[in-house]
Length: 217
Ligand code: ADP
Ligand code: ZN
Image (cartoon, rainbow, N blue to C red; front, side, top):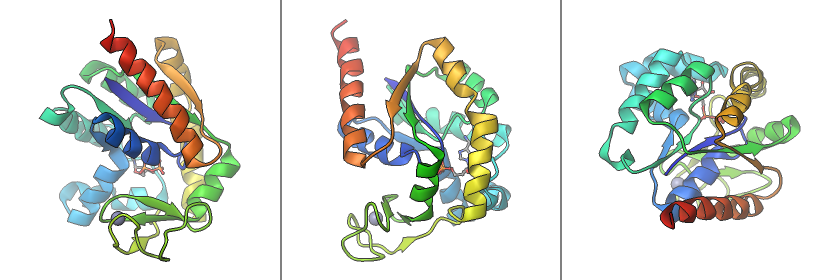
């Protein structure tokens, strides 16, 4: 089954998609993580998107659609996937619907004030992709990943100016997708406020029901 994890930056798409991937055995495909890996590899793609991403701007649709199209063509994505961070524009959503249409869009609803608070204290592990928060979800050893022990870092776009930019882009370019998916009948609104455990509990239940309703058909 094919799920899109949708919502503003900091909504928890990455955290929830990672848990869902473990629980349901579907590949977690994060456009942001694919771009950051390209930047770390210093590939041609990485060099062309580095400045845009650092400023909080969007990567052009053609590059992004290409990247996702390639990733979805790999064998592990043949029987389902969890997309995180894609689509972010109407043309991206239209492209996905012709490449490999989504079954459900998990729409994580959070207030702007929550986004700002979450992103401002976020810490990331480059080695395993785990994310933490200095107040809400601190690692056991400050600056070290609980899962793998690597050093944590602050994402280049988690600074106040870029956070504001990302919220502006979300409102202008991405929020219209809520209507797009509602009218396709694939939108599943979820309350993204509160602790990660609570949100995960809701999502796990929803996904379980959706997956078992297909198996019992
Ligand atoms: P967040 O959801 O916290 O903003 P992501 O890791 O999903 O973070 O994305 C980080 C950045 O990567 C975005 O701000 C944007 O510059 C770029 N990016 C990721 N996905 C897309 C996309 N689908 N379209 C355009 N740019 C993207
Ligand atoms: Zn780690």
